[in-house]
Image 1 (cartoon, rainbow over the protein chains, first blue to last red):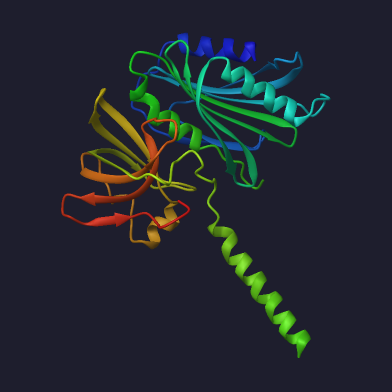
Image 2: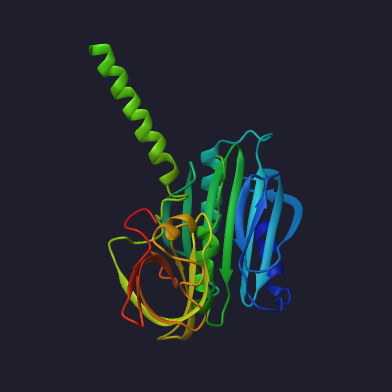
Length: 169
Length: 129
């Protein structure tokens, strides 16, 4: 999780992309999900470390525009002996530690159930997050707006969060 | 006769299920508070009539200044059945929308209906997005 948060921090520090904002749907059949980004995303392979010390191979799909970062991390737990509840629980616990959780609802996407959270960060940021566990893969979506004026981007966080799909699953 | 009625009932149930399946929304809209409906007046920035859900981006002035709102609608096929097209809204259109707000207080929500300058009221759909 710390690696993921570090990656998010790097993204936030990166120069923002120029050009008009257009939302585009991206399909990732290798990871079996679909999502919309407002800017061209990059794909990076790495590791995802849980708060309970397990490390899973992961792929980070990310984009940044204005004061907002958009990331989807897909971590493969198929070869790790860790229950779904432990993975999801640790992920939500780590997210919750970053600020005040304003909402945590059970959401269905296609035929999969998971969590959607809203978090007001200790650093003044605003985060929309989704946590799903499908076929022993953790899907962690994080849209994060940083000051100033986090409300200006909050609608975009909502769109990013709601655009996640698990087609045919 | 009893067997015939049984098969008839089974066939009816199968038809009902197959008809209902495509209508299931891609997600459950749990993040939106359907017990509340709010109003927003602003200017259309973009209207993306797409699947599985369309999006209306609106620029509106609120307490923190000019902000962009993202409202989620039904899919393009669903909207087309109601006579909507991709040009139903154009950038710059002045509109008043009614929507179920996001539970986390963000500038997002589930679209309910819109009132246009000409007084016309358009609805996305009744339930399920």
